[in-house]
Picture: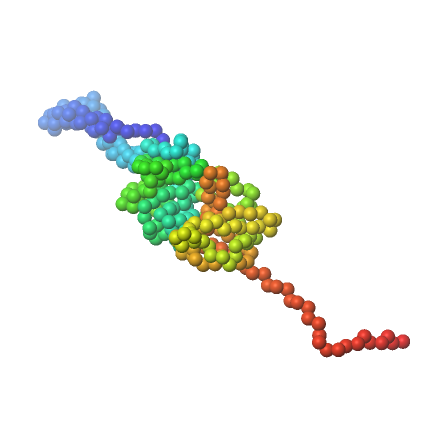
Length: 320
């Protein structure tokens, strides 16, 4: 689409010149109607046509200028993978008018991702740091959102790119202030219906899958029966704890559980089945963070045991 910024001003100038040049002729024609020769009538038609064209052009320019101003303000859509590629160093402030669109795959529901949104499109996911505690109500799981990135910053945290406000201290990004949230993140559909995890195996994941919504199948927890989160031996406070998933081939994968989650003190469930979560990455190590307690494990029923009868019996004699 060609840029036509400035047409409105030029069009208004055209209209003004056309009016000042042609109005005396129109008044003369009203005063001296007998002098309307064929040539004069042609001049009148040309002048009227110029006025109509200038008015139409001015109207078109207003509409286009408004539309372009909206586009310029919001910027073009880019993929999440492209946005993450713009991160340079520990922190990169975004000054270009860019925006991303994706599905909310994780939020602060059950406080598993406090003050955090994870948004994913076909190219990958990204974690967004927000200074609010009601994100699950504003941006529910499965909602489609647009994120306006100008004025925000990308930060490299242990090799994973995050999106947030420009840093003011030691962190690579700060949290987006809750009072400015409407400026940067807008919900465009409450239930887009496309929040589906990608089923993967442990060995298939790489650092490039950070913040992707995935599912592990035919897995079990090695620490079944223990609390999700352990306690600090000195203070007794709940602390972030790593639990371990095992698959049918003997593979292992860490699951990181924050003490803020609603089930931190509950026991890890037994059984084998599926677990959904967001892939996390820090300093070369992958892990999983469970979303919305999406755990579906079943305990296999034990096979019936053979019981010998207590009654006496004898082997029948052979018959002839």
